[in-house]
Length: 162
Length: 351
View 1 (cartoon, chains in turn brown, blue):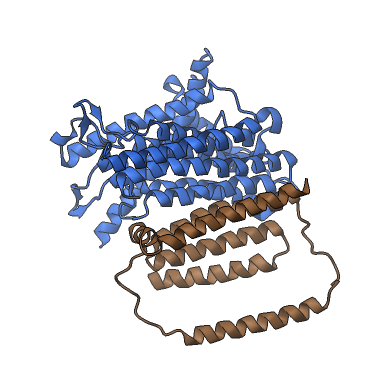
View 2 (cartoon, rainbow over the protein chains, first blue to last red):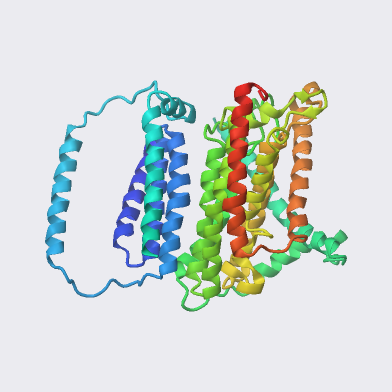
């Protein structure tokens, strides 16, 4: 049962990820990304990380991508990409970078030893909460300060233009 | 195993059936309630007190021409009402409608009148799935290829994001006091004990601020007056569903009413003791189950009526007022509530 769900979610997730980068309509791109993130959330749930699954949907699918959609709809992006390539070297550079990234991923993936899942730690809200305000308290608080700094920085950049 | 599946399926059928029936009943209550508030009669011709009016309306909508306008984005145009209805139906599964932990049916434990009693993330699931509901409205607005629809969809997405934050913060206060994400636990903590011997220990008493913020935010989340800017008739004709007809239009209407039922059930569960009632210590088994359903029904009915009452009493907000209320009014209040709950718990004022 779990395996069947995993394969379904994996296939749907990969297909919609491809649609997210290849479809011509920007609204469809955003929606495909929503489906991909939803599939990732389901695989988290399958791994027993139920809090992470709920947070994934709540934060990414439910909030951030709504803003994406908002911007795409407000700007009314054209359906067709502009014809002709102005910078042909970009394609070569892109392929080279993708090759490097692929080589790196293969090296990392090959090095992973499949181990039995750790039984003691469950991805419940309680377990995660204890970790966040226990051993990882500093990192947790630091990230929140970092986000605040990013917010203030964005505001400053916008203000300067006016 | 088959008996367990049968019991679960029956539970799902009963709960979904009740909710969908409530949608029809609420349509009648809305129309008659509006008439009552405006000092007129309302639909009273079909059946006793006009009670069969929703059936007639549904038949009418089913038989109307299902028109798909030219120049719409067909796929997304069809998808939008489906998203709305599925999201509205999915959110019910974590709400405990009644007691019944100790009841067995054909030897199978019932586990309470709740579709998914063992879901650890509980209310988070509801918030997560509920946050997807905005896609139905936004997509309907965009795919219709109509400027009024688009404006409605855009307004709605901005509104939902703004109010979701305050709503979640208000829920956080309750979760903090409970120490669990499960709505079962939220209900259990509120039942059976009293302050000064008479006031039930419902969350609304220490967290009246959170309750007010939550109720206001929920009105915005369900797109009801005074926050129905997504479909403001006077400005946007009908907003995001201008181009929809027949059952596709009815799908949006149904999801709005289902969201209303969920929202009311959530207010009752989080702040008004859920299915608990004073004097429930003396009951167990089936009598407790029946009485708890009655108690939940009475509380639910009050908040459903509140939705109708407010809709026909208050005028609509202007868009800037709506945003100001959300960010400058509700958000600080919700934060204040959270701080208060934290302090009160640390000092031992509330258990």
